[in-house]
Length: 404
Image (cartoon, rainbow, N blue to C red; front, side):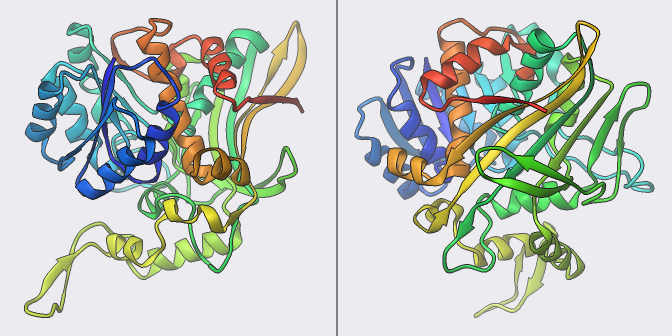
């Protein structure tokens, strides 16, 4: 397998360090708008299979040309969701497969944003599913940790743990702190704003997908391995759009353990219009310049990839499932915990980006070895879960299950 990795930020860099320990691929081209960042990621692994290139992720022709020139079999997208569609189309143009960790962006319903869906996450990708299927090509979408591993857990629960499923609820929480910062998100603030301030989506059988107010339905969830109780709220996330396509459940939700201070900060950004992506004109040194308020917020905060040495604690991604087995009620929480001290010592990557990065590498290995295969635009739920979970454990990062 020959891979083009687009994006050499925190997650992209972690991908190179994880993949370098595995023999399943022939080469990996690491491409970024900042060539120096791509070169740094390649230099750190000291592996002849890796090479660095510069590419603008929004330039479909350039990306397709890079895929063809390096004879890549698959494009692995490690950029933020703004670049999903140009990279998705570039892969199809070049005849390559495609894998991402976040899907095409949503747009709220123009009249009833907190009741009905407008354009849903992934709609633009699924609209082109027939083209991929006819070509016999695979676009594996939402294959990070959440979405990604959380979806694998949902499929595993349906296949091996339950006869009927009442609800699948993805629950994410952490006890991470960052020394020296009052506010320092451990993941891309651009993506965090997008998913937290958009109307959250809920799925119910018979009703389909609908939306609620941001940060709605707060609940306290007890996370394992010492993390403890964290208040979680509804957040827009891909699992709610993916799981019902392949797994039979009466209700699907996603709730994120944000904490009151984080929620209040996001609400303030929204109140001031600093979450907007549309450029505003501001004075410059020579002439007025157009800038995106959200990009300014991102530029003012520390790069999450650089926070590892200051971070303390653990992060947990998991899927809570309730239903019946052999006629009796059952409730489980399937989870994956990463300790920042371990990920920094083992890989030099902070816990959140490492946990996101390991899952697409596991998926690539399953595709390269033929354990997973398919055509069209498919989510993680479309594939058998057990091989993925076994390989994740082989990577040195086992998952867990708690009976509730």
